[in-house]
Image: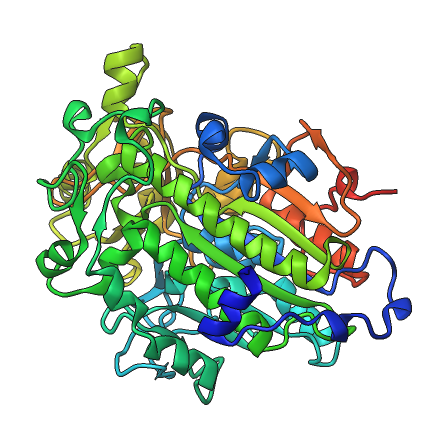
Length: 546
């Protein structure tokens, strides 16, 4: 019935006959298709908390039959989707791959740049500018690039996500396609950087207008609301909710879209955004013939945990629990499709998070008396500007403050004949006096020293001499930066789940610390190829069945 429904709706077929040809030319442990299932804002404790609500085909299947890396981290100072996706896909740190933040100052051009924005390229699949994206700022090859290189272009590499950053940096430079949701049109789109002509199957998918049908729905809990024992009602926890006023089920999606000015972006905060990503993946696999021949292919599918509204509701919200119950069903359907079509011995699946989330500072402080608080960057920068004006004279010394990085105006500093290192150190020393800041370090200290294994290792990992700001900041545990007029968008939590499943994977668990940089070389080992030379991670040998 499953196959018949998919065939009826999308024309999907299962490549059993093709996969049966020439199997003896491959090692028994070589997968035909590698599927990366990546979830934005995926707390490790979600699995334990929601375990009894999951079915047996999604999260539970992976955890029961796969290999669990139970102490897995992103050892980056800045826990942003851009930084972490680049780390995951390349197998190295921001100090090498160059994606040190969402935005930074390009000193050569003296302007702010975005990690994936590239106006040289155009949108493919819709009439908007949301496809003007590329991986040009990624300074090292991704695993997919290496796979294309060693197979002389025969391997197929694709990514699918709700957000452009996740799709582009998962795909790398040489991918056959990267697709994401266009907030303006509600269509899945790509960039001319990857796709010259939008494929017919993707055009047909958009033609179904499934997104518009979602906005005719009301988001109600999948199960009896009273059974959500792992969560709290937003009315009881002081959550902001949608637009600061919609805090409880049901949610009228059409009304939310209208209040957002007609943007389809609101879909990313609902379970249907994930369902659309899953359906697009199920359409892509047979149409692009992924895994149909003897050359391994790579597909990265990125789901989201309520996206930009995750802090409007929080980790303990009914909305988050319902999102994961529904996401479990989407993952189960994706797993069933690839396992039925290819067989477990012909696939390699890894499930991990792109970022985690932090529990609200007020919650930690009031309920558990933990040292926590809200840090106001606007106030801190205003005081810093006053301090610099007193010390060095009236001028606009600060060019940009972005996600724990402060950029000073180098041209102005040079013009005034001020020592740059001296000013960097002055800024760091001033900020170190603030409650809520654990460390503020001058960039020249990162240049002159190496801090392996210590509390400053994450600073070193996030430092790139051409891109990093003049001063880097780490907040105290439990403290969260929040501007007066902007929603909270920060996590200090570096830990995310990592589970392996499929060809050559042994069942088990390791408590040894693993890093996101280890995923790319481990996949390369399964594929029998050398990882990119820039990889700094190690193969997780415990995963491999001997």
